[in-house]
View 1 (cartoon, rainbow over the protein chains, first blue to last red):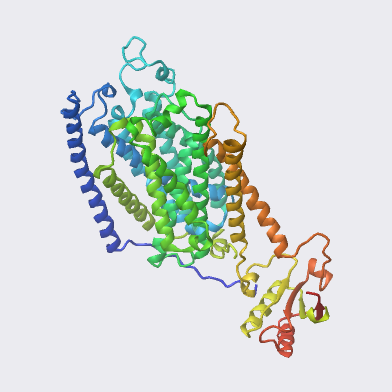
View 2 (view 1 turned 90 degrees about the vertical axis):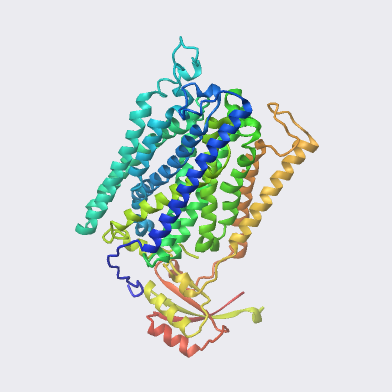
Amino acid sequence: MGHSHTVHLTEERYSMTSKTRNILFGVLALGLILTIIGIFQAQGAAHHEAAEHSALVSTETGVVSADAAHHGPTWVSRLWANLLLNGWYTLIIAMAGTFFIAVNYAANAGWATGLKRISEAMGHYLPVGLVIFLLIVFLGGDSLYHWRADGIMDENSPNFDSIIASKGWFLNSAFYYVVAPLLVVVFYLFHRNFTNMSIREDKEGGVGFFKRSVAFSGAFLFLFAFGFSILSWEYIMSVDPHWFSTIYAIYNFAISFVCGMTVMTMITLFLKSQGYLSFINGEHIHDLGKFMFAFTIFWTYIWLAQYLLIWYADMPEETVYYYMRLDGNEGIYQFQFWANLFLCFFIPFLALMTRNAKRNPMWLYLVGSIILIGHWNDLYLMIMPGVMQEHASIGLLEIGMPIFFGALFVFIVLKAFEKAPTFPLKHPYLEESVHHDVGP
Amino acid sequence: MANKNKKYIYGIYDDADAIMDSVHKLRGQGVEIHDCYTPFPVHGLDKAMGIKRSNLTIGAFLFGALGCTLAIVFQLYVMAADWPMNIGGKPNDGYYPSFIPVTFELTILFTAFGMATLFFIRTKLIHGKVEQLVDPRQTDDLFVLAIEEKSHNFDKEMVNRTMIDGGALEIRERELEK
């Protein structure tokens, strides 16, 4: 071939500069300090509110009694709700890393091979994310989930709720403590398997690992579809235990993938600015931008599919979900509800439409940040009205915790990225990725 | 109409790499390439020829915006002004979620049909058009490189030599009706 300019690639390893590490630790500390101040602020606000209502809200013990719902949520619920929000957010972004590996193998796609180690590194957040998530599940469950209240499924209890009791076959401790966390463990085992095969491929070469990865990808995607659904129902949808939506799991998946792609784009741009992955060029960035754009539309489609059907059918047991986010709860969520559509759809949709926008790093950072903030707000609207009702507010706690989690996520991902070469040198599709060209 | 005809010089190749080579060399000498006809898409040829990016996408956006606007106006006119209908007791005195699917579909319909029509108009691919093949084999296994004689920096001698050196099987000249 006269014109196939051969690129000679050699193994390349990332090492975090002390500057990056210091910045990350600085941001981490900032997030932590803001969170701690936010906790005190939340305590103060709760006391203030308690005094105002002159009701005996159980703040003094710091432990919420099982029938907390009767007294209204406290600052403890607020803390757990924030932990759940950010814990879930980072966990599903990490899952998007594994999903991206699997979907590229299954689709026989070669263009993203050069970016594979980034998605592998993202998946390595899974164990950390799971530990944090398990802490929330084991310690904060009673503050978060109304269906875990004492006697709520016991016919003889004054707390009995027949609607929740009828869901007892799914909303129970077996699923809550064992099945759902095990699913994350299974996802991580798949992830380990993918990465181990990839590392061995670097040493041994050949197409055997590729073929095995394709087979594992099929199994993973099948399991992921069910597992992710169960996780989103068990931990997020059940904060509103009376309500259900059949599209809820795919709604969460849309968030997972669009944010996963956004984070991946940002990490890729960061690594390129540090001088790594020199063969990743505008073509790859363009395709990542397309994923951000396309799954923004996908998210909107799913969001509207949920909203429109509930609006149209107008059944009280369904509309209550939107009532509580619009006119209900003293209307405190109304602004965020409409702002959400702008942050997650209108702004990214219009801002990422042109080709130049998808190839401009600074623009991608900017729009990507809007997408990430937007979907944080999206999850806020899923969790807070169920846990906090009309007592939710955005204080330093809500601002500091995502900063903390974000810095933690990036630190762990970059640390994981250090452990392997920056791209899979002997992957059979690496050459295709290097010569990737999306046309004019 | 003879004065409107344009003279072209054609190099006929049997190898994709050879035509790429010639394109690179001719462009390097400042010659404008009129077009290349290939039996299959040749990777990177469009870039080598220096083809500018199509403005079709802007047309697509405008058609989409038109479809979106028309859908909103039409639905508001029908449902709110001209003939309000009670469908399942849903409100119709303004823009409501029930209008979104129609808006969405018409936006896509206008984008798709508008863009396809625009594409056919811009490329003059009109039904009944007679094909102007340089060589019938260009649809089978040969590659044709066309250069307009009046183009910038054109030097017949140099172009012929570059094409022959680059592996062209034959060189032809032809006038085409514009």
